[in-house]
Image (cartoon, rainbow, N blue to C red; front, side, top):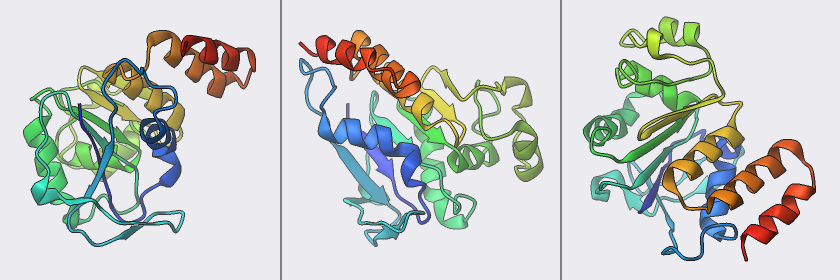
Length: 206
């Protein structure tokens, strides 16, 4: 499995913080599996600036990204998703979403998928159903909308911008990069803040 992170200006740093930190460090990942890295890509190789003011330079241009079955594509939230410059990535998603590439979209990225018509036949969530209906004329997936923090439907994972933790949990569960006991302890630690889960997490890594 390869992991790809799409970069665009105003990227919401915190919404993907758990994912990038755990994948990059590998500290809680299943050590019996091949280590994974994150390839950052954008429409060009020009640096982008996140909502938090951090400058990130892409490793690759979208033209050089070849997604294969089992790969993970992370689409972070941003305030610039509805700009025409994102047509390339949305066309790419449309190509691979039925090819068992795992597509993980949060916050503004779910709006872009809705506008592209990619949520019309899949269970999903976003920031608000009525807002999707109002802002995305191509969105016809109201009956598939679930009022939950994060939703996984086969290889599509969507989440509200308020659910970075739940989003990460669903992605880790779908990709199997953590052992089950590690993932459950990790999730409960961040969700409940109870130290007993830290010790459970450490024990699971042995």
